[in-house]
Length: 81
Image (cartoon, rainbow, N blue to C red; front, side, top):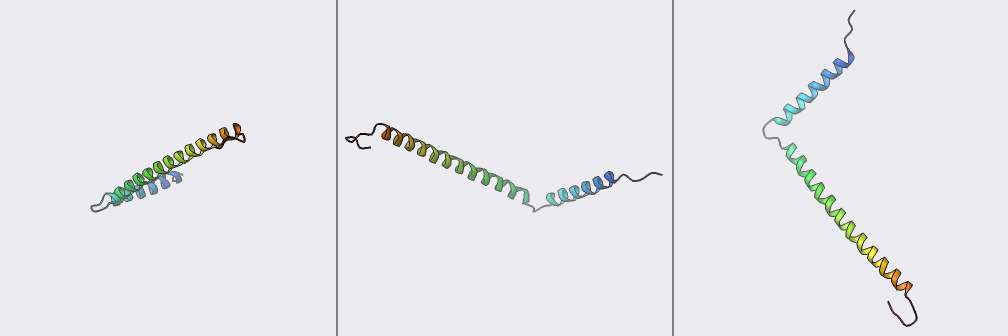
């Protein structure tokens, strides 16, 4: 009484699906992989720009906060900041 292994059936189905997808991706004239790589590169550039701009804004705000704090600490009626 040998029962078929359900895991083997599922594995065979997934393996067949992956093989068909790989064969489909390798057919001539397909540029799906290149398009995906382009999107990854564009996304990385945008993320770097957003990070750089965010860092610059944060630094400018911290500098202004320090200037205002120093001005308040040394404030007198004669000084103007």
